[in-house]
Image (tube, rainbow, N blue to C red; front, side):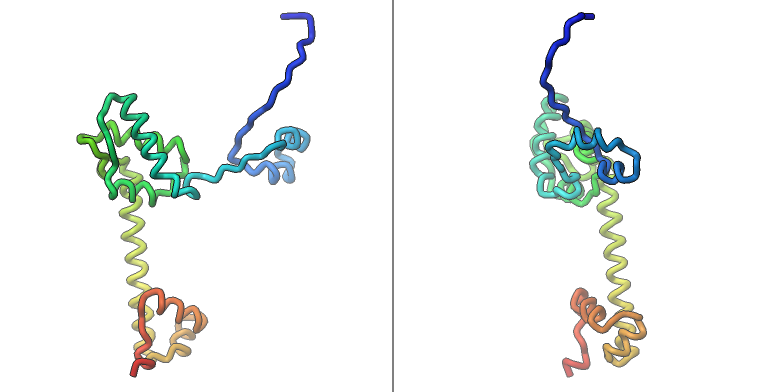
Length: 184
């Protein structure tokens, strides 16, 4: 309501999960505003790309949330930590904090167990591991069958699989499949 101009000096801190350069190129974001905001860009990778930070963040959230909820939770089991490490974290840091709070509320003892985690986080690890193992076992069996049918001729087997010979060799190495013809 004043009538005098007051000179101020401010810095604006803005955050987004969008690619503003791309938005400017598409005409979806004002170019002049982009250049005013883009003075000192700080790029923080998502949590899923910073898995090494998880143990410290989990420890921090356990301490903070346990105190706020008047609980004596001191640690997290290795199985629960593995499930947290395997999860994709689309919701980033807030989702991790909410997950720890959920686990602390649900936890019966002094250590968070895998069963205390939200079902979507714990079950994803179990399902992902099971599916990956099933796919690996199926691929390994298929490779061995094709190689057997081709009398371990990798060139012929690679043609039947519609892959290069080097790709077949790479997969054989991955699954520990030894070329029987070479071992004779």
